[in-house]
Length: 245
Image 1 (cartoon, rainbow, N blue to C red):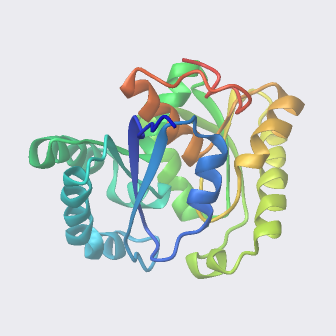
Image 2 (image 1 turned 180 degrees about the vertical axis):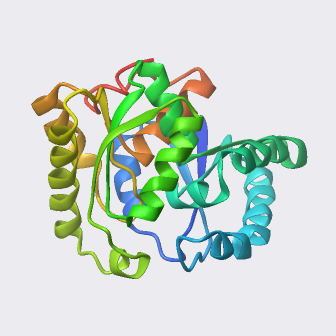
């Protein structure tokens, strides 16, 4: 028997203490040999105060994951990056390299990088979040060279999103994504962010219907990680982004 160890360890630091849909979806789209590492925060709300409260634990996780062999660390949660702002996020990316010798990424930076890579800098945005948070996400993306030209949102709070059932979330991802793309025919791609719903299934039908890439937290952070490793891309059958290199 040949023993093959993982060749890439992608570590996610998530905003929530209990995480189930991240590993469930990750291993459905990641290529063989890629291992997921998880460390969790307990961010109470979509606010800068709530995020700041968890930053000491975040930096502790960064150091521990680097020592445990993480190839790359991702601070997940688009609302987390939106609350911090792009200038702060970029400074944290630089600090992680200096402090722990590890590459740090975020979902929102990965989404912006993927959009630029595909040449799709005019996007539709579909979320479960309230207008204030959507405004912050759109503002962050604009600083990263991506313009939101249309959007649809459910307007739910973090507590409400936590109660969303799996099937409801799966249906909502497709419905909101379709609505956002229909509202913005000049959009070149759809951004469908959020880590607390099942959304990887929405990529194939929406891309088939509209002929435009669908960018999620997970496919973008995975794509960015594999691209940084110089290995593992393209991934067949997982949408336009992961089939690119």
